[in-house]
Amino acid sequence: MKNILLLSMLIFSIVAVNAQEKKLSRKEKKAQRKAMLTEQTKDIVEANAWQFNATQMLPSSGRSRTLTTPYSVVLKDKEVDSYLPYFGRAYSVEYGSTDSPMIFEAPIKDYSVEDAKKGGFTIKFSAKNKNDKVEYFFNVSSNGSTSLSVNSTNRQHISYHGDLVPIEEKEE
Image: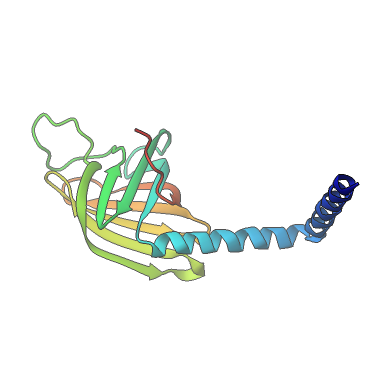
């Protein structure tokens, strides 16, 4: 008897919760989802430890490319771990080098975060790779969608699009 009573109470509570969820209109659900994404993005940026996952590359000259391989920029403990592809003109390079200038780990300098219009953020910092100073400019929308603009002293400007997410732990 107790089992039947517990089962019926459980079913009744599930039905009541589902009825409440169904009462939310499509607009209310969308607003709720947007508020959740905005809060999540704010928390990620304020933690000063995040990951940018690039999905598209836009070189200064040439056509844009959709990235099928996972490329990212990870910011943690005042260091950047940049793993991005590069296509463009190089003004000065090390002889015989075939490495991407956007793949390196280095301490960051001049880190700043500013509130952007429409609820997003602008994140700026610079770092030095093997033989170049690289400046990163992130425009983060309130939902986490991000565009990255990279300026370099020895290479043409390049941009990327992707998402700002919490740092993914690497499996070893």
